Image (cartoon, rainbow, N blue to C red; front, side):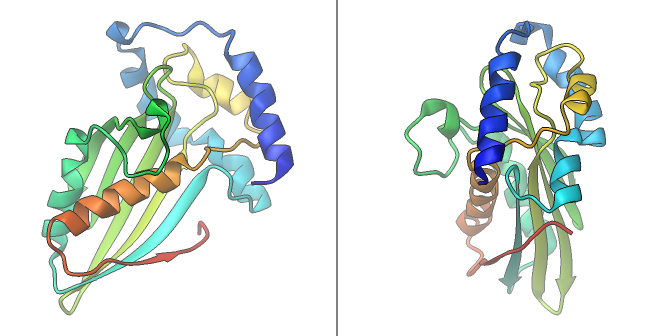
Length: 197
């Protein structure tokens, strides 16, 4: 990632660490997440300037399967305890997916970090054509302020001009989701990465 994005991330994180975080038992992150996911202030600067520091996109080609099988496999993300990653840091490895939608043409889920509940959103659009399923998988960081902080959507919008990095988390999310599909016995997932549309 560009050094300016890493420096900006460090600067903003030094500010955010002083924001009060609500206890998990209050469930603040669950009722703020839909608003943050809808507005997506973490992606505004990324798209405007063509940056790729807090999102990942892959295109999957899955021959010889059905979209319902793929969606059923993706829906197992809620039961994952660890992401598929080479990282040794427990905070990076921990998996906390929550399925939102699971239709034959679309799958989406939230991913919350363990402590402060930063929100990443994963979306997989599926298209079946002649016994092959094509999927456009996209994972992005919704905002720089964690969902356990009151007013995270507003604060993320205010801080949206500052680019930030995800430290490879969105790539880990897609790797973990792709692994669920591969575990289902689908012969081959041909991964092709691309930029956001």
